[in-house]
Amino acid sequence: MLHANLGPVATSFTPDLERIASFDREGRLQTYTERRRTWRRTLSGRVFERRTTPVRGWRPLDSREAAAVLGRAGELAREVAREARQELAQRLRDEILPWTPERLLAERERFDRAYRPVSILPPDRYAAIVLQATEGCSWNGCTFCSFYAGRPFAVRRPSEFEAHVEAVRELLGRGILLRRGIFLADGNALAVGRRRLEPLVESAVRAFPGEPLSGFVDLYSGERRGEEAWGWLRRRGLERVYVGMETGLDELLKKVNKPGSAAALESFVARLKNEGIAVSLIVMVGLGGRELRQRHREATLDVLARLPLTRDDLVYLSPFVEPPDRSDPGSDGMSAREIDEETRLFARSARRLGLRVSLYDIREFVY
Ligand code: SF4
Image 1: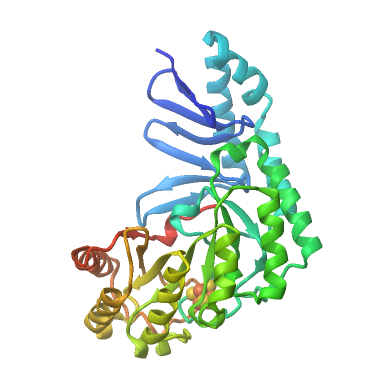
Image 2: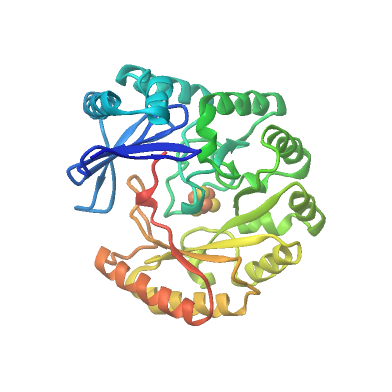
């Protein structure tokens, strides 16, 4: 029996509970499930298959595999169209059926014209409107991170940024209904000095009025931005910043070549909270390996306990993942299982402090 969900922001249906497809309001496939296998088509036009072994995450499909999955989802839509009535029939006809596999695959080129690669987002911003005020990371020196390897840091000029914003708006189309908030990318976009950042923020807010803003900032740059500059961003809609805390152990920060210290984090978080900006702190579990395991945990929890965090704030626990192309002096070979156990221990201890805790598994990110 046909079940359909005709929400204002998306359409989904299943004729037999074995095959389920969902679409944005442009009619583009979002997810397809068939006999317990799940595929996701992302904004970049790429298709990924859910996997749980050997590691959790998403396997990218090549073009031939992607075309096959898109074809099967298209067949399902045509099958459903034969018995669909009223609004479902109309959405199928006007929105969904015009998207052939070839047309969906061609979305990659449109994406590549609008965006540079989107390397990572916080888990609660996967559905944000991502606007790349910068490319790369202003520091790009942490030994455990390869997100922006080989990509020099650059700040977009206002005219270039406006063209990018327009291209993003066009690419999203009515798919924007699924999105909430603006994420100012890439790494450390909020580290950019006021003179260059403020026109970009004004453009973003003008293009998507009323949408709250968020972005990454590194501790070193964030601390140097004075209260007045954070206040300006808050008044323009900055709701949350994401800070790679990694650890409360200064010696470990030094070891992985990350600028900052526990003391600097304390004063920075206090400044943000004074301005009414929420913080999400990202702690890397497994950093420092077996040798520093306990000291990393104890020092981090000590610092977290001292911060003026409220229920608006969040502590993300990010299990250490070996970077593919870097030898990392910070890991010292903890197994995936040990890192999982350590993550659970971290989570229990942080929750006992009254903190909100969530998982940030970079292997879950696809765009
Ligand atoms: S961890 Fe953050 S600050 Fe360090 S290199 Fe990666 S993106 Fe840049």
